[in-house]
Amino acid sequence: LYVARHLNTPGREGARTDMLDELAELVEAAGGRTLGLFSSMRGAKAAAEELRGRLDKPILLQGEETLGELIKNFAADPETCLFGTLSLWQGVDVPGPSCQLVVMDRIPFPRPDDPLMSARQKAVEEAGGNGFMAVAATHSALLMAQGAGRLVRATGDKGVVAVLDPRLAKARYGS
Figure 1 (spheres, rainbow, N blue to C red):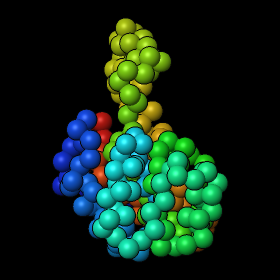
Figure 2: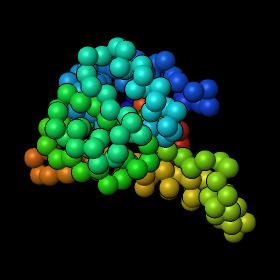
Figure 3: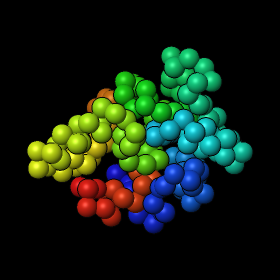
Figure 4: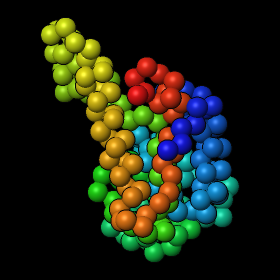
């Protein structure tokens, strides 16, 4: 596990230059072989566009082909990277050398305007609990575990899970 503690905390401003620089270095060090898990399609697109201009590695982007085609192409060429959102956090099975780096751009907290999550948080708070920790942080931890699970799919698999969100190491909810 690698947590980029030195990066700026993500906000709503869109593409983070420091995060894109870090991502480019990680992809280059891994020789491709990267599954990029992003919290938004906007973030995945921005990263794909930026890295396509910087690196000499194939960068596949969710939505440009069917998910099945993307996964097949990703698995077939170890220099290839695949970037996308939630459907890639779960169910992608690429054992072997084609996936040795899983990168998460940020902690995948639920959207603040999600009515179901908001209602759950409110119910926990009304019962005297911490709605954020019980609902949002728990939901994020589950998604991160599912995302990290994309890395090790067989006994011989190895690699790195990189989280480009310093809050994982610095915020009290990071643990």
